[in-house]
Length: 222
Image (cartoon, rainbow, N blue to C red; front, side, top):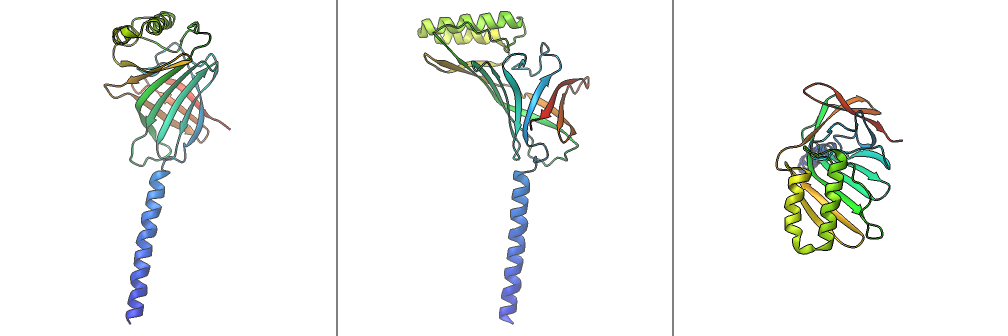
């Protein structure tokens, strides 16, 4: 009798453990339907696509969005190996059906720029601001970084000026700077989101929720 009760207890424990493991695995892979690497094509590269960072894909390697099963995602573009923009997202924790639209929250955005022969000649056409054209914003950033490289004692002043001229709504900071590269990051004082709509297993779209306009198309990378 005791042996039978022991087996019943063991069976219940294993059953509960099995459900627990299944739940955890399911939560870790709840986005497996859209997990993978997606190539991004902006419908209008001149239109501000993400409030803090506008990525333009006309130059260099294709922009990609990589989504993991746990809901973490990275939006990345690389221009001729010189400039890399990377935006990290996280998807909501609650489980969603593959037919739903996903609201991805920005965690941080980074830009890494390589410097060759100590010359800042590569225009950062992917950086936009509210009050300047892409070319003007690029020239302004290059000027600020040249000034920083020449005299690091003015780093704080340059950082403040960059914040004012490049993108007033976000915080511009220099993470590291040396002879070969520098790294910038944007901290987000307010919630920034990217809305993704599942069209098929190999196609996603980013939509403007106010106008329902398709801003970008994501094609699964084979």
